[in-house]
Length: 363
Image (tube, rainbow, N blue to C red; front, top):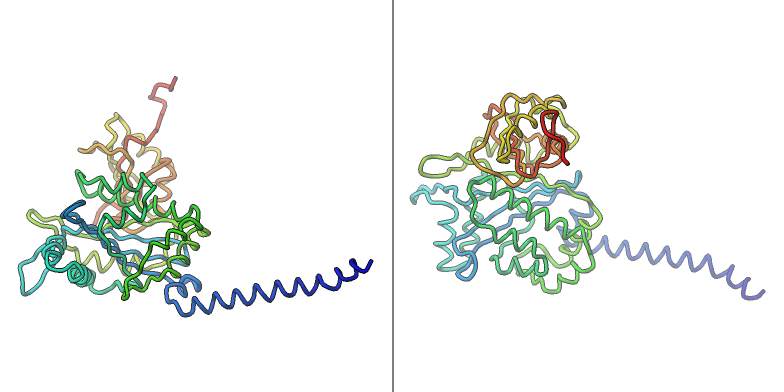
């Protein structure tokens, strides 16, 4: 009896103690986040920006350079990735126009840190300083691959270097990003343990605490990737940044809140058969037409694609998602061009399966 009475008296105190402990821990966590700019933005649903640079070395992928501008639209859980074509030239009044890649590796012969800083200055000049990162991630491919040791899929994708065109390069980059997000959605505990190997530079804003918060956030929040190709002009002798399209892209698409449910508006579509199988473009065209998409043309494509690619040129991500759903697959690349006649180009790859009444039934 005495035990039961004591239990009745102590239980409310125990519950109160637990609540107080939880409140104190929450207050302590919020206080830590308030002192860390990245964590604060994650906590209060503010957008995050990151600039990424991956470069080759003498031992692994020499003369290879990839760069990305990443904008995390925290409110809608959309990671917007811009892939930078490093073969694009940078114009300097004092020097002959040279590509971002060539300028980087020339500077890297003397000092890698200076080369990285110069690359970012040139890149931000190309985008008219419309991108101001919260933090940077710059590393050679050896360091990058060590971060993902034990994940052969990422290593396999990174090892792909021979691309017949820019679309296939963007497709591989998109798949790498998808696999990294998938990895972050996995075991948060094991990913945080791996942070022991992470040693932030003195001038780097992304601390271990912030990186841990990012991992936890991606673990409990399902994010979508909106992959974009920075607009360029392809000339006979060189690739140039398309400054007019870049300006419109940032203001009209990239920084605007993305509505993934805005699924109408892609009225002018072309479909290309990149599967190597007969009638695939025609079948895909009629399938899209049945869902109220205005397909104006279909034809064969000069290259064979393993996977279906949907190139959206007006920034209508919701419409592209709907097309992918109709076709039961398709990797989306936002290739912005406000002057483009077509709003989307669909390249039917070998992975696409569409059957109609003219096809023989599968045994």
